[in-house]
Image 1: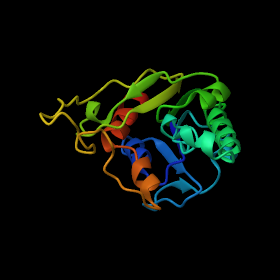
Image 2: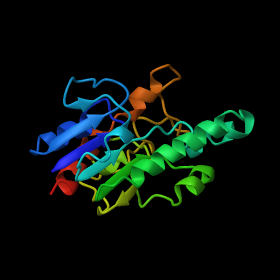
Image 3: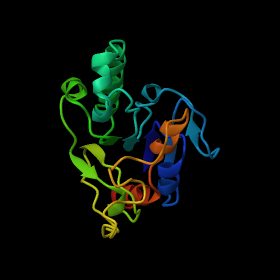
Length: 197
């Protein structure tokens, strides 16, 4: 199977598919962190190159519900939001028979441009990671991911990456988005095992 992992510089999902014998390539404007099979281009340039499966992780900065308030205080973000939603929609509607596009919970303005809400919501703790990070999947031609290793909630009432108030422990930094954008290995493994059949 030919698999394109769009907007991935870490190689996490690509490696999971390659380990199962698939011809998988990551694609991003950034170089691959691991030096593996990677196309350093805008994903839209390679969508018609004969892929069987597309898994995309487009930037969420202007689409995420957690940042919607900035649209109302920083008017320049509206154009960036429309650009991000248009890119997301291009990936979702790519001429590929099986597509999964990942993003956090999206605000209503982006949903209106994209045309629909997600098909599935998953959490890292459903795939063996003691953390919480609600992740949405928009699917076309694919079944929803089945949890593979569901963990019980800790006695403290919150996961490792959360404070008791539910805020993520990662502080502001220039590279915070990079650390938060890497797919959890358990989720990548489930994608490769379930969608790579």
